[in-house]
Amino acid sequence: MYNQNIDSLTDYPFDRLRKLLQGLEPPNNLEVLSLSLGEPQHKPPNFVTEIISNSSSDWAKYPPVIGSHDLLEAISEWLNKRYALSSQFIDVDSNIVAVNGTKEALFMLGDLSISRHIERPRPAVLMPNPFYQVYLGSAIIRGAEPIYVASLEENGFMPKFEALEKPTLDRTCLAYLCTPSNPEGSIASIKYLQKLVELARKYNFILAVDECYAEIYDKTPPPGILQVCQEMGDGLDNILSFHSLSKRSNVPGLRSGFVAGDSSLIEKLKTLRNYGGAAIPLPLLNASAALWRDESHVEQNRELYRKKFDLADKILGKNFSYCRPGGGFYLWLNVGNGEEAASRLWSEAAVKVMPGAYLSKPDNNNLNPGEKYIRVALVQEPAFVSQSLSRIVNTL
Image 1 (cartoon, rainbow, N blue to C red):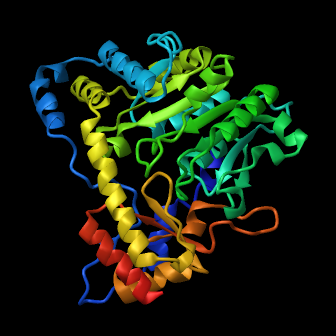
Image 2: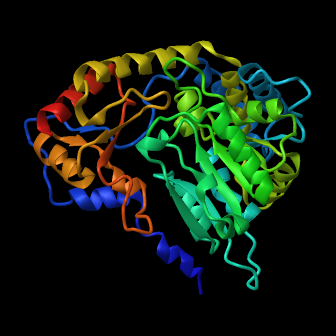
């Protein structure tokens, strides 16, 4: 009566966290401080609401599913500037599609890439471990086998996809990578990305690079998969890049992002979205275009995060194997046992964090690379972050 693969999706991280803390009460004398959800709380630019208000007549129109031409032009301009792309490398009409938040598009990749021919070996979908749960959902719901590739400290918290056995790579149809990574904040190097592009083309699978945290970085802008492809000189075959305004511009409620890359894959993605994708409303398309064209608010945003990482440097020191992340807005702290630490922080300090084990899966040896960790989201104001980190240090 229904797709029974849905029954395998039973461990969404926030559901697990609610169950873990159920029955535990935080101290009455302490304000609850939540660091579990990566929801940016910095103020977005004032012009966002102004543009939406001035576009009120557009609510009466159906928006284009692929995005307005003005938005696609703004995205193209931003890509060319951000990654030093030649003006001919990205074609507005064939290499970009706007999406209603990248979560939708990352999930929809399963329909784009996973073949359901029964006579063939079960398709494999590669993903870092820990991972964004949408990657797993995209694979499971379509009957593919998720292959968890550990992102370990000794590997710079980046997965070694190239170390997988050939039979696994032969049946791989899709690989996800997040850089800067969620939750570790590691940045994939140009050399690493080049090898991954070569691997995707050798075994003919889609490489989906989730770059939603690319504009939140400490010192050096993270390299992008599109600039790597340009430098390699072989076009964009097999490659898709995902970007969002949620983290960059502090507008997670806007639900606006884009996918850029291989024109043949973008064409197929447009077809899928025509049938089952939600379009971004026209007033929000107008606001999105303005956000991609403005860099001042993005630099202000980065500076706020730098201040919070300065606080982390000062308060955490060398505790919990803390290392200042290169990008993103998470701390990935080794506390010995993430579940126990999360329970203690809630019941003793009124601080809510995410156990690392809820963002990862056990490997073939039943070892979970996230088990020792907690993820801490530094999305609130600096004073909030300072108080939260102090409580963590004083409790654990």
